[in-house]
Amino acid sequence: SKKVVVKIGSNTLSRPDGTLNRDFFKDLAGQIHLLREEGRQVIIVSSGARIAGVSTLGKWNRKEDLHYKQALCSIGQVELMDSYRKELKEYAVVIGQILLTKEDFTDPNRTLNIRNTIFTLLDEGVIPIINENDTVSVDEIKIGDNDNLAALTANLWNADLLLIMSDIDGVYDKDPSKSPDAKLLEVIQDSSKLISRIEVGNKGSFGTGGITTKIEAAIKVNEYGIPMILANGKKEHIVSNLLKGTAKGTVFLP
Ligand code: ADP
Image 1: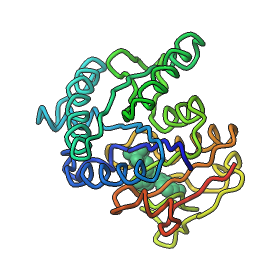
Image 2: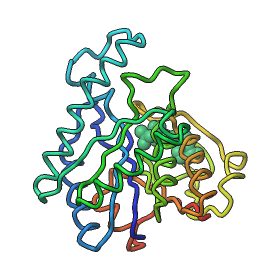
Image 3: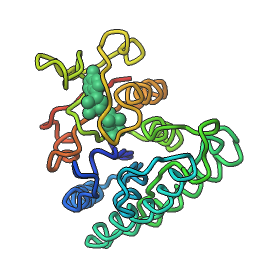
Image 4: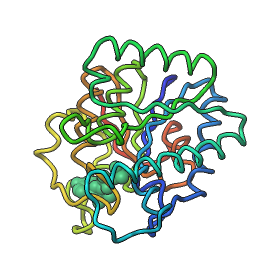
């Protein structure tokens, strides 16, 4: 896989107490550097702006109306990018931020513009880091979750692989937090039929979409002939190990 989109979930990049996990960013930067050494191109789609905003302000129990949530994302987005920038700088890797909304994928002019900007960044050896523009997006015009955003990005770029890094090893037949006997489904051949075959449980504490939006993402990219892997981003060297085939995850084959 030459062109890889890596999506990082909120639970993956934060600690259980809600602060950004520096060790995670360090490990990820090292892995991204390796991928590039191997001749791969990488786009990151990252969640976590809101949780980073909460931990920056330190107000954990405030009631969050729409504008407060958007304010949190505005604060946290900077912290998030700061973490990526600091760690990737260690490998002399430059990053570029792209904040998108749903319209960017429905208006052909905007889509073309974004495509060209992404290609320009990659040509310059820069890693684009994409997130939804939560400060301007209200529910009606939202993509709503970064799993779907990552899938749209993979399709737009014609990626070879979408990697979704969550806090779980993959899709289980039952909710793993409730059923200790839940079995990891390692290979999915028909993503569009999966949802009716599994039990969907709650999402993680800072997550937005849960397992449902990850399956939606798989369906989206599989339709374009792109495989997707869902795996546990909290495990060290997971990206490299997945590409070597030595780590566990759920592979969705087109
Ligand atoms: P992220 O922040 O990575 O997007 P989410 O919290 O939104 O993560 O979604 C992942 C969570 O979905 C897992 O931590 C798990 O608890 C939950 N989940 C519910 N049902 C399932 C299932 N059948 N298989 C795997 N995970 C599931």
